Length: 107
Picture 1 (cartoon, helix red, strand yellow):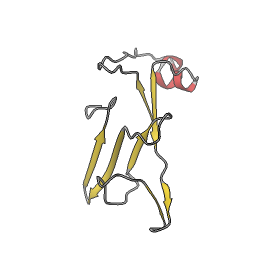
Picture 2 (cartoon, rainbow, N blue to C red; picture 1 turned 45 degrees about the vertical axis):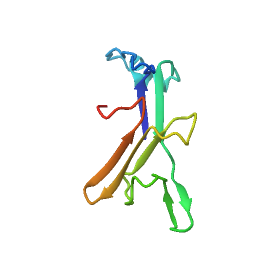
Picture 3 (cartoon, rainbow, N blue to C red; picture 1 turned 30 degrees about the horizontal axis):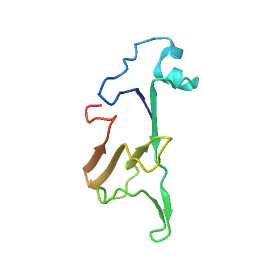
C-alpha cells in the first residue's frame, strides 16, 4: 500500500493541492514523475518472518491480537521504526487504529 499526502507543517498548516484534470498536475502524477516537493510518502511496513509461529508478523505492541490480511502499519522512507498509522484486528468485527502526525482520524 502507498499513501501520498500533501505536505503538512508542524503548526498544522497544510499545502493546498489544486484540483486538476491534467494527470501530471495531480499528486499521483507529480509523484510518478519523481517530483516529490510538498508530498509526503508512506507505505506499509513489510512483515518479518517469525520462526516461533512459522508466519510473517508485525509488532503492534499489544494493540492487535488477531491475524488478518487487513492488518497494516504505515512507515516512511526515513525511519522504519516510526509508525505513522497502524490498523489491526482485535475481534471478529473489531479493529484498532492508531495514528500520529501528520495523519488524523478525519482523513
